[in-house]
Length: 241
Length: 241
Image (cartoon, rainbow over all chains, first blue to last red; front, side, top):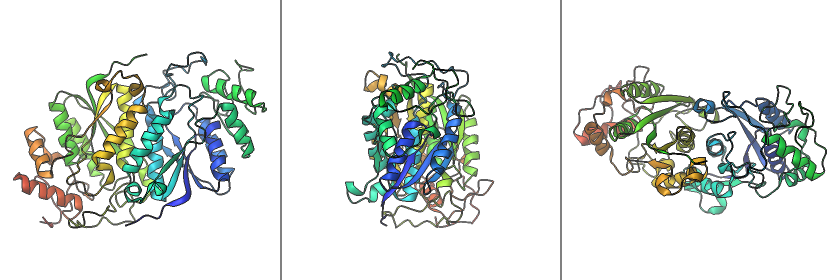
C-alpha cells in the first residue's frame, strides 16, 4: 500500500494567539490547503479558543477542529491549574523556565497534529514556535522540533512508506528565527488581522488583555518595535510596556 | 531551578490488554511506584477500559488515570471509526499495515505520558510495545521509541535540567524483544492475572472476545505456545486458533 501524500495540504496548530495566527496567514498565502487545529486543554485563557475560531473563520477555505484534552488533570502549570497564580512579566529572568510552562505541551499538540496529518495525508505541520522570544519553554527549541519530526516520521504509516525525504512529513516552523517585531511585520504583509487574536494568559471573557503577564509584555514590545499600532485592548491601562 | 527526579517513579501506559498488563506487573514487582495511564479515545473495544480499571485496582498502590481523547474525530481507523469493519486475522500478510492501526497512537499516548511524568517528576515511562508480534504498526518499532525518547528529553523541563543521561527521562520497553509466549510466561512469573485483561478489538460489554480478529489470533497463539491455559472467554467458539 502506498500513500499519495498531499504536498499542498497542511495541519496548522492554531492557538488564537499572535504567533499561530501569523503562521496560518503565511500558510494560506503560500497556497496550502489548511486544516487548523486548536486544543481546549483546560487553559485559563479560554478567550484564546474564541480567538482561534474567529481567526479560522476569517478564511473561507480553512477547516478548523478543536480537540478537548484534559491536560489540566495532570496539574503543574499556572496556565491550567487555578491554584497557581500567573506571575507578572519578568523580562530579565531569561534563563528561567516559567510556571506558565504547560508540561510537554508542544509534544502533545504536535503528536495530535501528526495523527490528523496522517488521516488527511497532509505532508506538512505548521507550528508557531519561536526560539528568539521563546519565554524559556524547552519545547520551542529547534533541536526539539527536529527530534520530534524524526520520531513522527518513524512512528507513522506515511513515514514508513515515504520513498524519500522529499515525501516525508515535515514540521514547518516559519517563525523560529524571527523576533516578535519581525513576526508582526510578516503577518501584516500577509494580511493578518491582529485584532482577532488574543495573547494574554489571563484575558477576560471579551478577550481584553491584562497588560501585565509575560505574554502581554512580549506582544506589546513587538508592536512597539515593529512600529505597528497595537490593536490589543488592555483592561489595566498602559501596563509595563 | 533543578528537579529532583524520582528514579523509582514510573508512568505505565495501560490499555487493559495482555501486553500492558504484563508491563505493569513487571514494573510493580521491580519496585516502581506506578502511575497507570489509560485513554478513552473512542475505541470500539470499550471493555478494554473496564479491564484497565480492574487491572489497576488489583494493585494496592497503583494510581490510575483515564484521559479522554477524541482521536475518533480524526477518523481513518477500524478501531475508532464504526464505518470501517474490523477484519479477521490474516497471519500471512505481515508486511501490511492493518486498518486497525490508529494514526500516530503511540506518539499521542507517549506524549501524554511525558506530560504526566513531567508533573510527577517520574523518570520512567513504561510501554508494552513489541517488535516481534507487532502486527505491522510502525509506532511499535524500537527505532521509533528511541527517536521519541530523544524528542521527549529535549522537549521537557526535566530534559533540559538533567545533568546527565542517567537522570534523563527513559522510555522502557521490557517486551520489545519477546514473543507473545515469552510475554505470557514472564507475566505468569510476575503474578499477572490474565483473566482480568481484554485483547480483542471487538470484545463485547462483558469482555468476551470474538476469537477471530488479529489481536485474538495473536493472544490465543501466545497461550498455546507458552503452554499456559488461556483464561479468555470467546463468544464465537474455537475461532481460528
